Length: 246
Image (tube, rainbow, N blue to C red; front, side, top):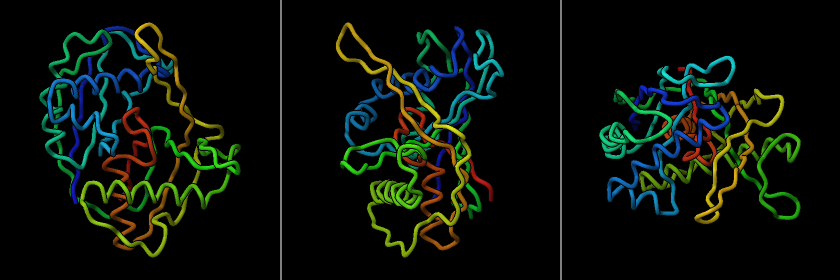
């Protein structure tokens, strides 16, 4: 197993608020999907996209990314061809009003033993409540840690099976220890188009975790998938980008 990473250097053309930054990066990446037939097909499919991205860093203390400054953000994927295409197309989006990718650096990372995972962007997880209604998992809305762990594992299993076209048969959850790092739910915002004249702002609720994976082979594979293409849901909006400790 291995993943492919693009470290992108972005020049900021106008001031960007932290709350808007996920949507702005997401839209920038989505532009790339329109410039390649294979990527366009992937974008239109209702399936896992097998990529994730992090936010601009370093984060400013006042939560405003400054015009004229440069920041970095990272895109990861299990799919080498996807990263290869992005590396070329990202720099072609010169007319974006918010930022311009000046430089991209590609890196290949082979599977490593992962002792800890840390979510850098909110991990979005939906579960069913007592009325069988889908809700975002939070301590206040649900609080069932075992349900959360199962949902996270099921999602990673589907991502693995979707990309590698083989099923894993775990004997336990890949999570040995899960620690919730936030005091209140963390949010990702994006604009959703209703029609040609109207868009609404959508808020996703998530959490930031420290996870200690189990040491068995399947657990380590799932931890690596989380590192490669995100933990939880809504990766195309910036959800569940993680770092690891080996």
